[in-house]
Image 1: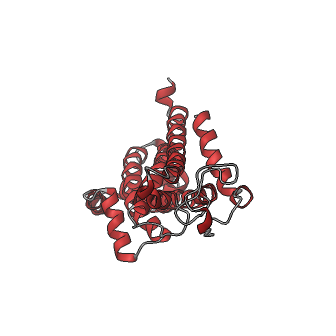
Image 2 (image 1 turned 60 degrees about the vertical axis):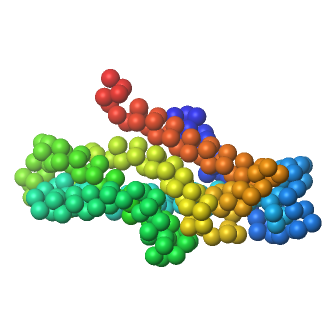
Image 3 (image 1 turned 60 degrees about the horizontal axis):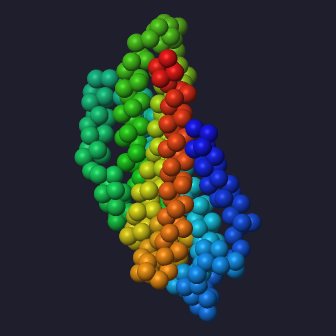
Length: 263
C-alpha cells in the first residue's frame, strides 16, 4: 500500500505542479527540432512537430487525473443512489434496477464507452460520461448486495422503530457501514479509467489531438517506433506507473479495511 500510495502521489504532484515542472509549452510547434532524441534540452525528446515530449507528458498527467477522478465520481454517485434504493426497498424496485445493471453489463466496457463517445463526440467530458455511466452499474451492484445484508441488522431496525425516514436510514446508518468495499473498488476503477481513456484516445475516440493526453501522445508516435521510440515509450511508462500505483493502493486498502483478511 505504501508503494502504491507513493506512486499515486507522484502522479498527483506532477499534475498539481505541471506549470512549474514542464519547461516548454506542451502544444508549441518547433519544426527545426522535429524528432529530436532525448537530451539535456529535451529530456524525453521531441515528437513529429517538434513539441517537447517531457512537457506533454507532464501536462498530460492533469488530464489523466481529471479523467480518472471524474469518471469514478460519476460512477460512484450513480451507483450509490441506485444501489441504496434497490437494496433497501427490494421488490419491483430492486428488479427494475437489477435489470438496468444487467443491460449495462451486457456491453463490454470499452464498447459502451465508444457508443457514448460516438453519440456525443470525442472529448474528455464525453469520455467521463461514458466511463462513468458504465461504472455506476459495478458500484450499484456492490452496494446493493451490501445493503441487502445491512438492512436486517439491529441498528437499522432500531432506526425504523424510532420513526427515522428511509432516506436518513440509508444515508446515515447503512451507507457508512457498507462504504469500505466501495473505497477499494474506487482505487481499481481509477486505474481502469486511465487505461480505457488512454486506449480510446489512442484510436482517436477520446481526448482529441493536440491536447497532451498520454494515449493521444502514443498515437502520434506509432508511425515512428523504429526511429523515434521515445514518443511512445515515455507516456506508456507513465500509464503503467499510474495504474500500478492505484492497483497496489487498492490491494493495500483491501487488506486494511477488510477485517476478515486481518484475522
